[in-house]
Length: 386
Image (cartoon, rainbow, N blue to C red):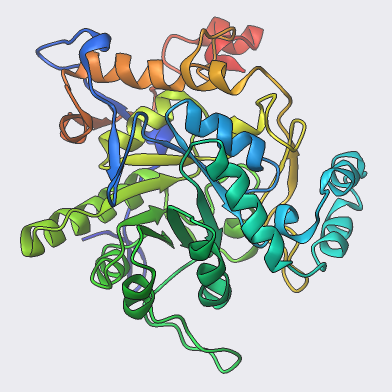
């Protein structure tokens, strides 16, 4: 398997969103008749889209609106919303900072310690609005913050880092015991991120309910440049889905796969589902919403790292409301709005009645899929030529 890249060394060829396309089915379905719901633990959501736990994307206001629209937003327990009672002035500093100094400003602001009372307050603000509350913490802090979050009534807990494995070796802190953690929490646990079949399968065996797939594809992430690691999202999702299906056959427990990052619009979302994802996690597309706290700016969770920043602040602009981005009506022709409508239309054209059927649609390697016949669009910087 793989091709020779030098004497005695082989490498696999892998695929990202621009490398593949979906083949229409022999039967087509009215988009209004397809089912895009997905489940995690005992919770069912109307749309298979999650807003990522980034401070430029999710605060309590955004999480509430996302929940009311049928999705799920994850609040970062190690970010501005739990470090500051009133984070707006710090968000403004980040947004207004010159690009030459923004990383230093992020590092300075994020030195502020997390205040446990704010964890409770933020979760309760979301819950009081009548929607599901989901929060995220890194593995070293998951034990400490999870107990506070559970007492506050959190519905879903996410343990997330750049690369997460069951077997983690550290001389600086005690590694998280995922089996013990899942048992003690007794609520749905989502863990990430990973990209390989073996690591995905090993994490599934700990009792988690869902897994995040993706290392470095996010628009604000520089992990692939800084560390040189990552696997393109199509291949990473296919491999993870294979682990999920094997685990399901072995145990009867279905653990959902969530493709996290790298999706620019509706087409990429559809390809992620077709690759085997049950849902997707998106950041930059939602940073463009009027409800996002970043005011059209977006930065990765590892950007403020003191030792080795692996992200940058990007400007995505404000393009519309969260409802327009999720459900339309779309005012742009680039697939950035009405993501759910795009998924339903793609499923209908592929003959898929639900997410599981969409995962089985035919996919082809298509290196010219974005350029074929699009010379005028490229020349005029419109449509697919932007």
